[in-house]
Image (tube, rainbow, N blue to C red; front, side):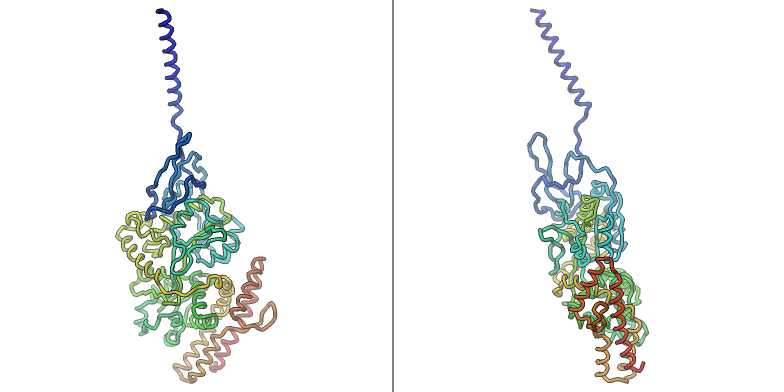
Amino acid sequence: MVQQRMIIVALAIVILLIGVSVLVLTTRKGPSTTTTTPSITQTTKPTAPTTTTPTQTSPVTTTQTQTKTETKTTTPSPTPTQTQTKTPACTKPVKLIVLTRHPGDILDKSKEAFLKSDIAKKYCIEDIVYVALPPGFWVQRIKSSSVDVGWGGGPTLFDNLYYAGVLRPLQTQYALEAASQVPDVFAGMPLKRIGKNGEVYWVSAAIASFGFTINKDVAEQLGFDISKLKTWRDLASDDLGLILVNYGVPPLRIANPLMSTSNTRMYEIILQAYGWEEGWRILTLMAANAQVLEGSADVRDAVINGEALVGITIDFYGYTAERLNPACMYVLPEGESIVNGDPIAIAASTKNPEAAEAFLAWVLTEGQAVWLHPDINRLPANPKVFDMPIERLAEIAGADVDTMKTQVELLKKKYEQIKTAKTIHFNDTLALLTETVMQYYFVATLVELHDLLQEAWTKLLTAYYIDKTIDKTTFEQLKSKLTELVTYKDPVTGQEVKFTLEDALRVNKVIKEALSKGDTTLIDKYKNAWRAAARAKYEEVIKALGG
């Protein structure tokens, strides 16, 4: 009996030792680990954001599903959040290629802030390379090499990309969730491009209006009443022209449409606000009253520095001018302008789709803080940014708290004003169908012949207002001749045609077809024809005045 008990005790000890050994071996292996990676598959049904501010690490609601293992899932929040998964984390460094029309101040601040973010670290994004190209080169660049993101340049540019098939619709939950926070429509204008099947192809990252900025000190020095500057037509006035006659310096600054998407949009607004024929008369005299600069930033700086009385500007350039020089004042032509979105989109040739969409999501949420920086002064597309903690806004934008508090108050007020502004009904499709031909006609007749145009205009003003050698009827007749649409010999058909809206639609289509085949010579042929016709009418006016 004793022997049996000893055998039982011995067996128990052996079993106990085996159990302890197994426990020790299991402990040495260590606990299973989880890593954070971008998750494209939705593990919970998307719901509308429940928070009111875009924050980098916003609280999320966690639910648990009881299966063989316990998996944590998260509901959408205002910013891309980490999803717990056992998929290995990204290990290969990512460098994003971003095509852009934005100026350096926006790009530099955004890059610095983004690369510090948890989002950049999560997706192994170690650098952003910005590629600044004129709009006409974007489609070919995306087709010929890998591009991750297109950012900035206006809806018409991005619609061109959309119709050319070089944009990739948003697919990840975090990007779609961020895009949902941007209004679909603002002040009557769409802030997104939705495809036929409901896919989101581009989303506005910022919003803007279009007008002009006046330097009140320059106006006072010239004895000019700034109340005379309320509409686009006022920029084409005889009064501004007489400043050119009396002082020999153009009072207005505008930009080459081939170098400025914002100025292109303003010319399109004028053509739609006044109609094609009258719009071109106004554009012609605006050019005659102006110095044509290469870029929109040059226009802004000329007004800030007191080199010009007035310059056409997108609103945030006007706000910047007001901040840098209190003598400056931005004017929105009431009932003659529009509010635009400034898009961001994923390029079809991206090799880093998840990382690219993570950057887009950041720009639409946390990155909205950058627009509020005093050096940027832009209106954000996501209004939730105004409710973010000031300290967090200042941290992201790289500004002090007091400055950001002032900026939030200022830009929120302007946001509400623009939201209710009286605007025109703008046909974006029409702008798209005439944009290329409009830009090149403008350059051929108003930029490349600018000296001759200005000579004819100043001689006409001098003859009527100064020398009084012509009467009002003659003045108006010659003014009409100077500003009329050209009649030219079409280089393709050989026929004499007038540059009407119908003709512009036809020629735009012909030129686009030629460009799609790599033929750029047709543009030069049309430019030559328009330039010759414009030269003839300018010289006719000069000759009629005895020149």
